[in-house]
Image (cartoon, rainbow, N blue to C red; front, side, top):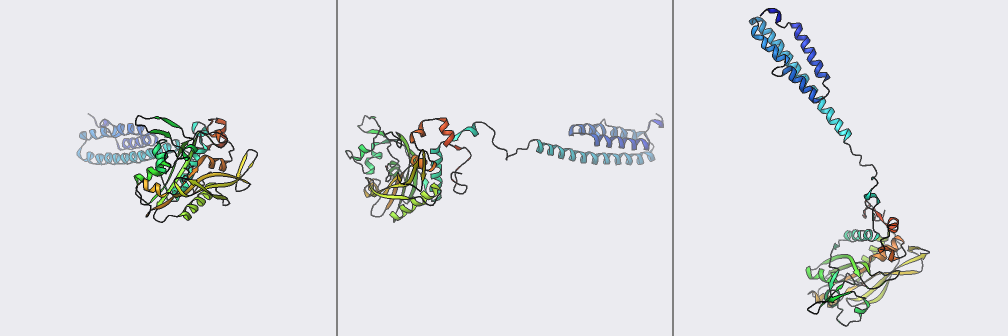
Amino acid sequence: MGKAVLPSTSDLTTLETDILQEIAEAHDLNALENTRVAALGKKGRISALMKTLGQMAPEERKAFGQSVNKIKLTVSEALDMRKADLAHAAMSERLATERADITLPVRPGALNDGRIHPVSQVMDEITEIFADMGFSIAEGPEIETDDYNFTKLNIPKEHPARQEHDTFYLADRDDGTRLVLRTHTSPVQIRTMEANDPPIRVIAPGRVYRCDSDQTHTPMFHQVEGLVIDEDTHMGHLKWVLEEFAKSFFEIDNVEMRFRASHFPFTEPSMEVDIRYSKRGDELRIGEGDDWMEILGCGMVHPKVLEHVGYDPKKLQGFAFGVGIDRLAMLKYGMPDLRAFFAADLRWLKHYGFRTFDVPTLAGGLSS
Ligand code: PHE
């Protein structure tokens, strides 16, 4: 083998320049890896040079070996730098192409077309207000026993109040008892007191049923019950809570409320509360006008009711209220006919309904 086949110093320089150029031109991580293998791999060009060392004279071998090692180092460094650059570029590209613009408006579609029913909206608004006052949520069944709907609330059998409730009865059961569709949310008072020790501070929103239908009555409607029991809760607290609630709910300061003496078997004394409003054509407005709409019944929980749940009326007292949610919705959003609420007319829902993402909060505005 002649000397001529051995690479010269200028060959080394050309090789280095070639490889560095290839590295610079590698346009992605794959191409770069191919370049690396072609240069430094077992059968790569630099490795091939090392194999020629054996044929060289010892003096030559040393200097040549050092030169090859230098190239190896330079090439390795260039590979590392290019690799870091390409990885960075790949990441930047992903960030640019996979970016989500969260400020874009919602696309047309179900989420945007759908509307929250005003009753659901108003329930959320009410819940938000009472949660802020420290009330928690209680629930009870819509199919109730006669006992919970009436007897435990101090409405014994044959009491005239039973007729006033226009009750939907289910068929008698074998044991002679019967179930009813609850005529009010007040049975949740009993269930809550039976299951919890005082102090109590709850609201209970839900559906109730009465056999009745006209412009302001439907056979199914919604109430929210309120119950506060403690050792020295009094009527001043009741009035304050209702007034604060009305101001927050209607989002105006001049809500005029009228407290009228009334009668409920489960409260003593009892009151009904009306709100001043006006009706112009098909529009309802609150805080003005000569009409009054009854929105709730309330009072101090009757000692007999406390006794029925095992509370000591000498130590404990409190108040309860039952608000008509649909009536509140009519007043606040100016909807004149309650029956339209449950007619499932999409045009009505589009007009009076609320957007899915407009969740009522006290901080962000209840109905904004
Ligand atoms: N349950 C009563 C009704 O439906 C309202 C009410 C609740 C009255 C709580 C007093 C206390 O008319």
